[in-house]
Amino acid sequence: MRVIPKPNISPIRTYVRCYSSYRQPTKNNFRNITNFITAQSQEYDQRAINKNLYTFSVHINVQGNITKDEMIKLYNDKMVKHPSVRKVYDKLMSLPTLSRCPYCGISSVRNLDHFLPETKFPTFSVLPYNLVASCRDCNFDKSTSYAVSQNTQTLHPYYDDYTNEQWLYARVLHTSPVSIQFYINTPVNWLQLDIDRVHAHFNGSDLSKRFTIEASNTLANLREEFLLYNTSSLDIQQELEKKARSYENRYKNSWETAMYQALYQDQWYCNGGYI
Image 1 (tube, rainbow, N blue to C red):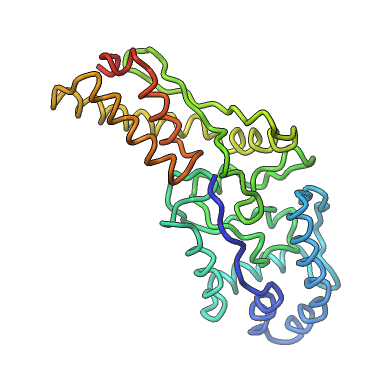
Image 2: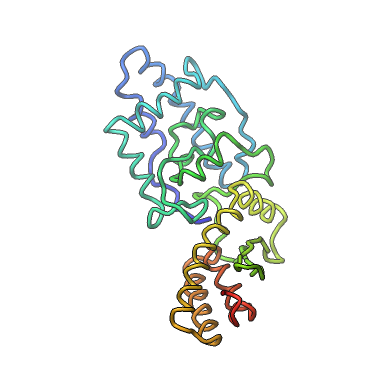
């Protein structure tokens, strides 16, 4: 998981820009709930800071004459398609570093994910804080799921920073061909809430399986490299340790960091287990 700075985009200006091109009476219906949207945007921000987004209730009607379908339509027709508001969409899409999905750190971002799904929480359909650039796999895996307790909340890239300490690790499986297993081992001083949330994120996005697939491709490339250059065990270990430290310097909890750490520390692998 990677952190993204919370977008410096006004929620209420975004909302107003979204409905401004509507004709009456639709435009007036959206305008009439502006204060409600403002209050709910502020409430979202505060609850996200306090790790309490799960306390929002699923709802169909938003406020006044605005329903779930109308809010979803506002997102699809205005934020996604209308030129004046599409700029907000594009800015949100540009926030992740190197366009890498913040949920998994593997794939490129392809669309905006509603952190609280719009079909369940339509009030936040165009709220910038609720829109996170993600890859297709993560967006599909999340779908319309949402947490019903504090400990089951997945990590929010704008609000949750679990990047300063390492919690993602890997072990080398002495199989033929060699394989990697990823697992979570959190620091001993962590609260149970933080432990549970990291596990919820890891399991909810099926990251163990996805990391293993990525690792398998890299292991195959390493095998060819070591065989081609007839590399010694010591050289292999030193090269792998160098890679581990390079990746760790960028992202402590990337699958690459965990994999290279496990590889260089495994004598069986360095001594020929890669064949």
